[in-house]
Length: 326
Image 1 (cartoon, rainbow, N blue to C red):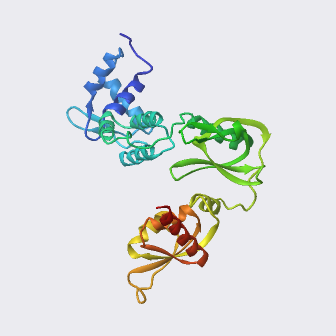
Image 2: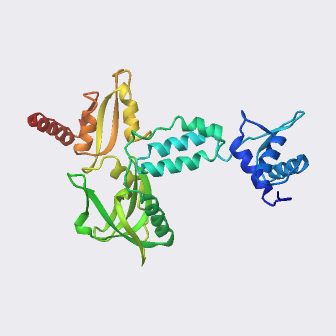
Image 3: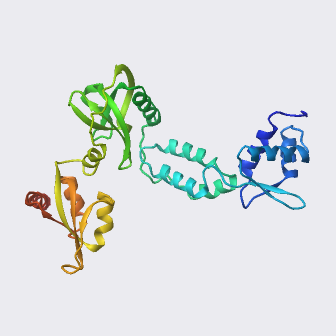
């Protein structure tokens, strides 16, 4: 059995980290036995000295004073409610493939005790969630971040799905050339925003549909001064088709949550109970087209388009085509 081991304090930290929390404490004798199993000599004095040193380094080791002092890790870098939020986000994120989700959740669970990890693990169920199947998305995101940091252009191929569900490279495997500017998460997917020289404008690409990405030696152009990223994202992700138009909606009171969920808390609304106690008006900037019309239709008359007239007519035309199709 080894005598003094330089790694003793790290073994003590590992044991405390994995095996203790407010509901599960350990004694000095427990620590000494754990060290013995790992062939490390220790006594009551050295263990107490080491735990004090860990406390001095900022580790929140709580000592419950008694005839046999008991120890546990108190405040952690990420607390249990915060950890649950992160795990929920990983579970819900469609852009993270299933196996990557499971691996990442495993790493998150290692941030707490084995008892709390087991409790959290019982609430995890990812089997029924729709997940991306591009397992290389982690590395793609890492390369994009590197390119943005180094101010370099990127090249990549982009695929779409055929009716057979097979992947097909767009434009026969053409390599897109882009000046990368931002990465954003919207509508359960990660997107790359950058300047496309061919189109002479900022465009977006789904990162989970990007493959064969490489960083070039060409300096990337900076984002144009005054470019409003927030407005661009709203116009792009709010509704994917059609031209951005200011639209007035007449909504039942129960629809406020739905309007805010779609357009954000800063959406312009008007409510005058002296005129109408059951409805409010929302004025939104929406890309009017099939997607927007389908969103309105989904609420079966509880949300109605009132202005402008061309948008009202567009919605009516879509309904007419749907009825004719039946």
